[in-house]
Length: 263
Length: 324
Image 1: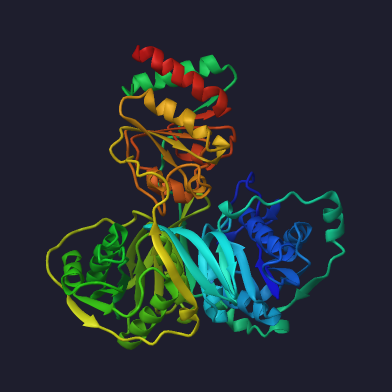
Image 2 (image 1 turned 90 degrees about the vertical axis):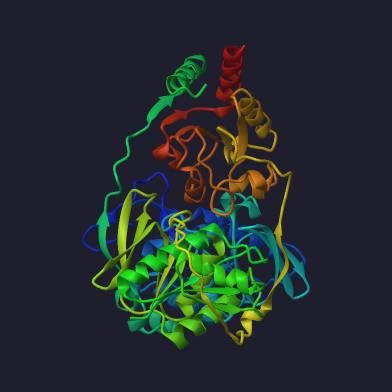
């Protein structure tokens, strides 16, 4: 069987993110990294391959993004994916959730996976929706924010926290599962794996290669439009203490609490 | 102009979720500005009285699909997609909550619809709805419109206030054939409580512990610190509850509790949006975190950049000494 892991390149957490006022899109020109949540999805896939509960032949990392997104794929391969697929096409620029979901579903269809895993959210867009969008296009059952998966025959028994406590749900494969960061502790890639990642197969595909209609994606295919960007109501900046002398720091905290009659 | 359809989540016995009720109130007010109707959709075990009672939040009609199980998204996508198409709704609205995200996402694909999520406010402009969505760690707010109908709006937790208007709603039972793939997910257990039943909602001071504590044992120091305050208790982030370090009943945020104590002291908490939405209305917020870039510092009144293992015990000691 084949597991596809959807990954995404996101701006590095330490970099100040900004929107390009001309295009109303996230400026992705700076330092980028593999979305931290996706490393948990890769780890889950690799553990299935290493274990004997599922007969996994192959773990394939899949992404959609500009040329630079190759780095995220190489990182995914260094973490244990066998090969990667990069959907890269100017026509995809400006795709919203609806258009992105359609495009990703088409690439996944071309791989025909038994299981699709992804991180529960991306570090940049703060949205938790792509897994459920893709699942619907692929006509597969899905569950998001999963923190535990057990194999039971052709079913995956998944647990996740929802509004009323923990739910346990059995999904019959093929299925799409987005995982939370509590599901595992991703390994650090070995130097050998990092060096070897560039030699693993990386397929770059244009939209025509996987049957995506240009009118369905990018700005033209998007169903939402950013009308304006506004500043949030100004909030007084908090006071910051750098802890150098802990006794002094504690004194300052206590004084702060005292002033506000909190103790 | 079609109306606004709102999903009303419940616990399996017809006790509705507060965020869903807020979404009903919001939809009612928006629909009146649009000159349209707001309706609710419920699935599973909901009595006539319970369904009619949603009229108290302004909706005039409640669609009920009793045969469809509550708690899984895809069967509800089937139900809502059919109602939206058959009765021509222009928007679907969800209160904050995990299931709303999943259903809204599913509808996006099924109906080829635009979606906005983490929406904090919705307004009417030129006879259409526009969502306000904070982006980039809440540093900017995007006004997002829809280029076609229907538009899907997924609210942020606590974004919409519950307003009771009185009145009852007409209940319309619907039968919907489920998609094949919607039946390939089966709920084994729903709403299991993990860990002891602790009460954090009555506390004046909450010590919120996150992954930065390093281990379950890190919560001992939190409990010590909470004990040094009058009426203090300990709360937790989802990551540490998922890891089994602290009980679910103490969890703040998206799928946990919403609190507004006099003081929220966050230790080793990064301040992810899902946590923030559950505690940002606290009267005072202090954060201790070794990562100066942690988002929590963006909304703290006092931020301490340092090692919590050094600071917490000394702070506890100092507070205890003062108490005498």
